[in-house]
Image 1: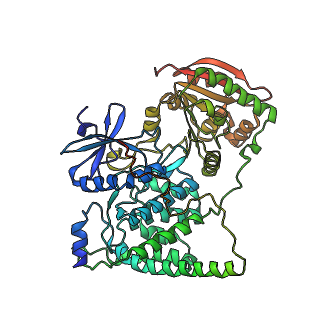
Image 2: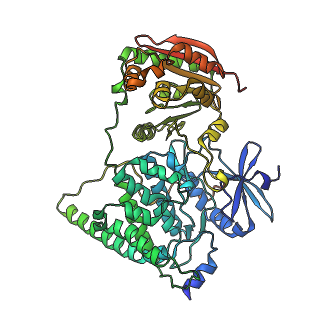
Image 3: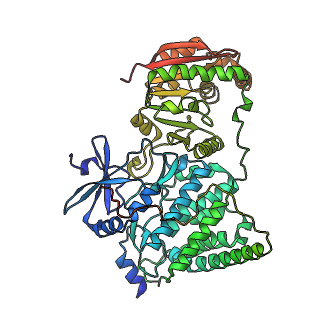
Length: 75
Length: 464
């Protein structure tokens, strides 16, 4: 059974909240729809030349890896 | 090396993977064998290195390796700020950093096993993740176990701050494990249910949590969640938080428009501070009630580490904005109300140190207290000797500005006392000097040109 597996594999170091584990499926679906529609809207705007590049001081959620060296160790 | 257990840091006992301890003045981290597989994989795969090179994770060096324990030594952080001391913008950055790291971890087969706001602090002008052992292996198809923690520590407080202002962020001080989801949901306006992000991440979560709160035997089946689905949750939260703004946000800038003296006097004060501070060749400085950091910045290039506190979260936010814009690495702004500095909180009241503990540990060479004492004395009704006691706990040298009764700010504060105005007859230079004489001796004293303000340089008699 998945639930038992989950709780035995991962040490119960704090209670993740069962409701919180279940709800993520719904949260993900809503997020998926939202992201999909935003993306679609952006493409439509891009097609009509209406898309603006967003200016903000925040990084993207994705961490770029190209300029890091995996072989360089710290010790 | 000293026996680590007796010097274990009070903030790290919750995690069985390891703990932090004081080795003399150095903080080191012990990793227990239970965490060896994770640690080795994180190290060998280059995961740690990527995050450290990007400045997202505090760099560490491996100090020793044995069968019983691995010891790593992280780069020292001069001063730790806690979430309830951050401005809105800092809080946002800490939240975004956590999401970035979780998304990256997921792509590399790891997860953040917890999403506590205390895993992040500010160092070298940026939010940095400091809990090196917060990672675990990702089990295919499992939801994010730290998701609820992210909501209660970050997302909930940020969303509430949007609706109710930054005072909400101070609630973290009474809720070390984050704000209860139910409370967050109840404090949100009804219209928040119309937002699919707020509805699902907060209202629905609160509902599900109370529905499943009695599942003592962990019998209910936990849904599976694909990696892609989890990515969507993270990206959506990231996008939402990025766009969060304060309703109350005042216009940034010109915090000094309200001052009662002209440009010349303003410059004279800056010049005096440079003239007094620079010859001391100091390492660390704190500006208490330092607003947006204008005066601390006059010596920033010549002092290794500067912290600036203010009661006004927006001023701190503006200061942080400048830190980012100018790429300043040695300036740390945070929110502090001198009349109620952050207490020690958590288990044994020691998990998170009180502000005064942290300040006396930090041991600034110089404390600046400009345009502050009249507020402490007249708004807070604090006698001079009590203020002196406060500053004496951590300041070696205290540069403090005393606005006289003729100063328009002081006059206004006094007038507001109405029939009690006579109770404040003690507010004068002589009494001020007398009150501070218990702890300090006067080194210098100068009237700031063009003002009714006196600048004092005090030396602490009680600290070496």
